[in-house]
Every structure is written in structure tokens, then in C-alpha cells.
Image (cartoon, rainbow, N blue to C red; front, side, top):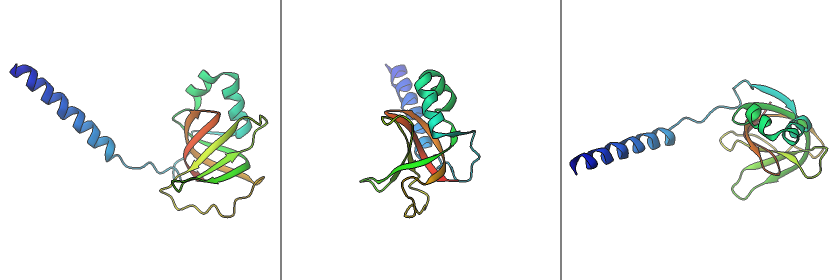
Length: 136
């Protein structure tokens, strides 16, 4: 019985340590980092439409730089800003969520404007989703 309690305590301490480390992990500075890949928004969507599994392996979790034309700019309820980039497919867009920890002025952005953004690729859900985005 004592061994089970000691094992449970060790596991609990380990889980608490990992949780503490994750909670205090420093925020990644996307603005100052060099992107691993650069791509046009249309090409990014085509790669996911052609072979989603290969595109996931190539892009997801990586810092990418994506260029395209603004389709829409949204202010969300939680105060973040989403920029959607145009694509040839009207059912898909590249969604870029601006990093809320960086002061970025988005007032001058207009639909149809060419833009280059940099951020972490999260994956695909009705289009491509990129987070922690900053301007290039």
C-alpha cells in the first residue's frame, strides 16, 4: 500500500512540474523570428487540397511567411483580429490571427490590399489557419 502511495505521489509531482513548466513557458516572438517557409496563400491552399497529409507534415507547427490579398478583416469578440486572405476557391481562405501580445495597427488594412504575414501554421479547417501572426 505504501509503494502505491509513493508511486502516485511521484506521478502527481511529475504532472505538477510539467504543468508549471508549460504555464510559465515564454511567449515565442514571431515578429523577430525567421520563417522556415515562404508561400503564396493560393499555393498553400492548393497543397492542402492536393494532399492534406503531406501538407500537414510540411507546414503544421512551423513558422511560415504567407503572401496574398486581403479578403476580409474581422475583429473578434475576444479582441483579437483575424485577416482572411483571398483564394481561387471561394469556399476556402487562409485565416491569419494577429498575435494579441504584439501591438499591431490594423486600421489601415483594406480589402484587396496585398499583404505578407508571418505566423505559426495550425492546420486546416475550412481553409488554412495560421496563428500568432505579425506583419512582415
